[in-house]
Amino acid sequence: MKKKQAEIIIDQVQSADKETARAAVARGVKEAQEKWIESALITEALALEIINIARLSQTESRIAAQLRAIALSLDTKVNLH
Image 1 (cartoon, helix red, strand yellow):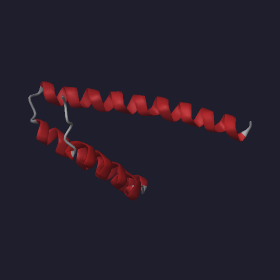
Image 2 (tube, helix red, strand yellow; image 1 turned 30 degrees about the vertical axis):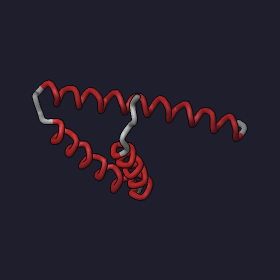
Image 3 (cartoon, one colour; image 1 turned 120 degrees about the vertical axis):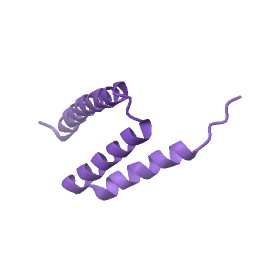
């Protein structure tokens, strides 16, 4: 198998895995919302799980950079006309 083919397959698998993970998280969030759990508490729980994942997978720096980008995006005010 050529390197390019391997990269394409890896990208496809990662894309499918990302969609699977996102759907699972979305189901969990929806379940929490249906139980009338405050959004701030859901967000805090998600953040704690992100920290656990980062530490277990030893990807703290990468995840920290992603979280900084998310924070910047949330802080940026959209100028709607």
